[in-house]
Structure formats: structure tokens, C-alpha cells
Length: 337
Length: 247
Image (tube, rainbow over all chains, first blue to last red):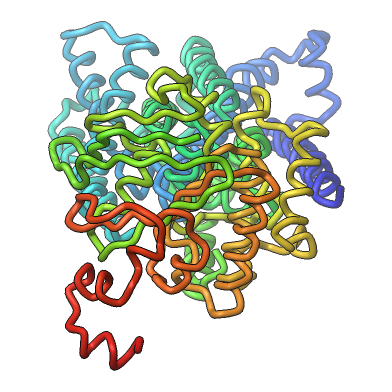
């Protein structure tokens, strides 16, 4: 009973935070728009065309992008941690995000040269393939190294290799490409409007729903492979589903926002600590919400502290998230995580 | 209850155990005795459905396991394995509840009957007072009892145990076996386990299966197979060495 109450209260808190941060995300910016004016714009009664353009053209899509993609990252992280039974596994440290960025950079450059016409679906597809390639490399390595820290080191190395190649591609790209690639390659939620946002929301929405439906077998898998098999779970099928869905989710983020670090590790840990449980039925929606809140906050910081310039989103998420990873590692040493 | 015929077990092309044949009736305990690497765990994993049998047949209640659906099979067989369960933020009751998996609906939520089965299993294994304690905080002996409750709450017909007493102190070793003895009598459970403690196996088992290099080196009542002569030969020990420590 106690645990049930804690879960309900935690959800209430997260939803409240999400509402507050969405509001802050929409209000924050160099042009000050009063809450009254904002309300009028949303009700369609405002005559201020600039305010409407700023809100609908910039801040609302950006805030929604942070919510959706942040949620996707946190959930991808949660699944990878479950898959590897390792609390410091995540799309960024395992090099999966970087793999996705590499294939996205390739396709963006190809598009600039008119080789292909790029739409959001193809971009997501490219990212998914890149994520899967990195993931396969990590899986191949993980079958050889049983040690969990070595797995992370291997992932970080794969990430570095992919990032280096991406950087080289960006450096050699034409001037016109660079304008496009620079913003994306430091990471930002600002690049998403209209069609891209709907595409990302669709992919993420469907994936999150699919993960939620898999809550039961994922919960059994958490205990360990032999106990999952003992309970009648098709372990191989669950593993494949987890790999595909986490690749899709982290690939989607890499395609639309570029690199965003540490969200996938920090948020699941914080959410587990808040809720006092790691059960997927609770964690799937909670991680999604938590990731969204975390990324909206990071985005607000990224665009306000050095305004009118902007920080890369990854800079902020690293400052917020890396200490959490250190806390996790300290706890592990003491043996309670 | 359980019939195993000419079973070969292993990983893909790596055959680890071959030609294993035995039967276990309701309420009976069969213990597998053999050196490390003799194939005990592989056989248990195969019986548990974690590894496909390489050849041969396994029947439970007369029905070939190969014809059963995953869930149907899981309802009849449960086990306790050597893999350490990962139980982040789980209470002991949470861990036991995972045993009801084959009975729960799409989201794995427990109904009234499930909850009753869990409580009953925790009562039988004397783990009720641990219900809300974090699984990570209890002793190895208590963990093994909780994992037994997890296996038992499924109300299986066949219980598989891989070295269930290996890391336990004498108190937990004997109380664990006592619980097992009661379970097989009260619930008519068939039990297949691997055990290193030959002296305990002799006391609790109805049948002993001696395994050597993946092959059956003896099958029968413990009295005939667990004598000093048979065991020294089975474990490649000189009678002097045996005498010095076990005599």
C-alpha cells in the first residue's frame, strides 16, 4: 500500500513538474512575452503577430521537442540498463547515439549534394541503421567481455570513433552544409519544426507504447535470463525487441537533436530513486516523463545562461547528468545498487 | 511425473551430457551427484526449458514437453538456479511475486488467487517476516528461501534446483532441505536437483543419479550408490584421502 502511494505521489510530482517546465520553456527567451499575451496568442485572440510567430514558430516546437526526445532518451537508457543489467549503460556511453549521428551526417551531406532528397522518415531510418550498427558492435564486444565496466569502456571507444568520423565529415563538408550541420552537431532541440516534430513524435510515441506493452516480459528479464526463461518468457524475442526499440528511440534523438549526453543514465536513476521501484510498468511512463522534464530544463538553461548566444544541449545535460553517474558508481562500490 | 529418455544436452554442437534416462514420480526427489563439469547444470537447464534438448525426450505427466506451449510448460515447472537474481529496489515479496508470471495477464498484475499463492509460499518457506525487506539486504540463506518461495508459489508439478545449498551455513542447509522434504510430501512435488553434499543427498533423495563426464554412472536408491567405495571411485579419490576427511 505504502509503495502504491509513493508511486501515485511521484507521478503527481512528475506531471506537475512537466507542466511547470513546459510553461517555463514557452515563457523563457530573449523576447519577453507576458503570460497574458501568451494566453491570448494560444486562444487566437492576439493581434501581436511577432509574439505568435515566436511562440508557435520557435518556443512551442522546441519545448515539445525537448519533451518528446528527452523522454525517448531516458527510456532508451532504461532499456539498455535493463538489457545489460548495468546501471551505467546508456545510448550515449555505449556509442549508439554516435553511431546514429554518423549515418545521419552522411545522409545530410548526401542530401546537400542533391544525391538524395531527404525527409524526416529517411533521416530517422538512417539514424536507426547507424544506431543498430553501433549496437551490434557493442553486443559483439559484450559477448567477449563479461566485465561491465569494460563494456562501457568499449562503448565509449566506439562512440569516439564514430564522433571522430562525423567531425571529419563535417570539416570537409561545403560551407553551405556546415551551416546546417554545425547546429545539429553540437546538439540542440531548436531544429525541429512542423513535419520533423510530428515525425519524431510519431516514431517516439509508437516506440514508447510498444515498450509499455512489453512491460511484463521486461520485468521478468530484469531478474536475470535464467529466471525469465523459467517464468516462460521468450528471452531471445524480448532481447531483440529491447535492442530494436532502444536503437529506434536513441536513433530518433540523434537524427533530430544531435548529441545529448547522460540523459539516458541520469534520468532512469533519478526516477527509480524517486519512485522506489524499477518495475517497467511504472518506469516506462515515469522515465519518459522524467526525461522530458530533464531535457526541457536543460534546454531552458542552454538558451538563457549565455543569451543571446546558446550552449550546446549536451554541455548542459553533461553538467547536470555526469555527477549523477558518479553517484551511481559510488553506490555500486558500496554494493547497494 | 517426469520421464527423461535418452536425453542429450548441451550448447549447439557442444554435447555435454548424453544418453540420460530416468523417471521421477510425484513426491520424489532425484539428486544428481557428480564433479563440476559433469553435466548436472546443463541437464537442469534443459529440463527447465532454457536449453533445447539435443536429442531424446522429456515428458511431464505423460505429455512431451516439446508439444507444450511456453506458458503451459512454465506453469508446471519452476526452478532455482545458480545465477544470482538481480533485484534492484525489489522487496522479498516482489521477488516471490515474479514466480506467478505464467498466471498473470498482459501487464503482469497479480490477482487475488496469485496473492494467496504468494503468501502461502512465503509461509511455507518461513519468509513472511521478510516481505517488505529489500532482497539485497538479507543473508544468502534467507535469499535461497525467498527464491524457493518464488519457485513454489507457481504451484508447479516439478521443481528443479541447481546446487540449492552450496553457499549456505549448516542451519540454512538443513532447514532448506527440511522445507523441501515437507513440500514434496504436502504438495506431491517431483524434485530434481544437483547436490554436492553426498551425505545429505543420501538422506533426502529417493533416487540418485551419478554423473561422470556427461554420462550416467549409476542410477538407483542412494543406499546402493552413495557408499564409500562407490563415491571414492566416482570422485577419483583414494580411499585414504576419503578416510582422512570423511571417515
